[in-house]
Image (cartoon, rainbow, N blue to C red; front, side):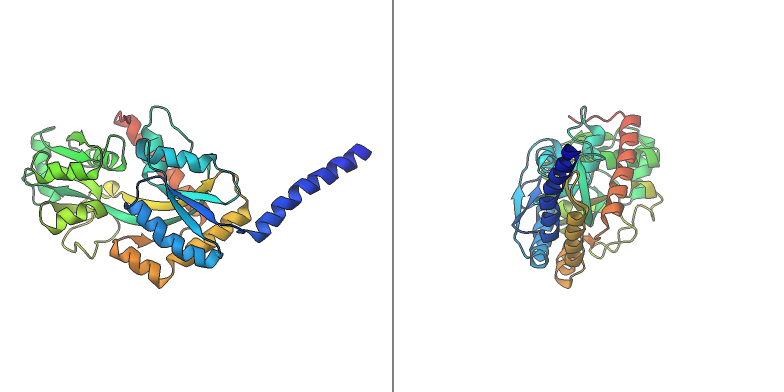
Length: 323
């Protein structure tokens, strides 16, 4: 009997600090890992939101860039392996939790098991844009040309197995066409070859394509999302062009290691939601043509896992395996 009492006391003693920690969280600075280099969209969004979150949480949020690996795999693994105490969180993207695990020969992590989901912060439109060699002024013209000469037209992407590559594969399936995929190590070299006429079209995020669109070196044929974007009012959505299944957006969310305390997750979610609802953050996101979201932890996890299932089905059916 005594050993049962002792065991009970030890269990209470072990749980008490955790409960106290949850009640006082946060009590020290929080690391926010960005699994990409500084200056990219994920990094910009992390810094915009972290500044506002820090005001609400009352502690510093320190953004740490951890680039490396296929599609941000190194930094994402660091988030998964961190202590589940709420003091290490990080940015996730449609690539790190969607296309990368769907196309990897051997997945580095399991989005269903290895993370706590906090909120989808924001989403940015993606697009298909044509260069001078395409011969297409509209998406309908591109589809017509592609059907006449299967495989003759080529599309560029920022890398095999990335979201732009899989968006191109979705386009082929939805439009009944066959294009030749030309992968690059990043969006910029891909864009340079499209503007130079070496490749016909590109699937890309709006942010990286925008400087090329502004100068007229490429022209957008369609954008993702449920409405046209203010910066390109003349460009139809994929749905308007008759290809709603192609409408993929680049999103940026906040995650932590698996098994984080529910109260800690809720506290972080409240800070994210307050940040994305603030006029200052929304104004900065608007400049990036990015929609503020702030979804609940449950809604965000549901979104990621449903999208992942779709990416896996597409990768399997089209025999897509990342390098």
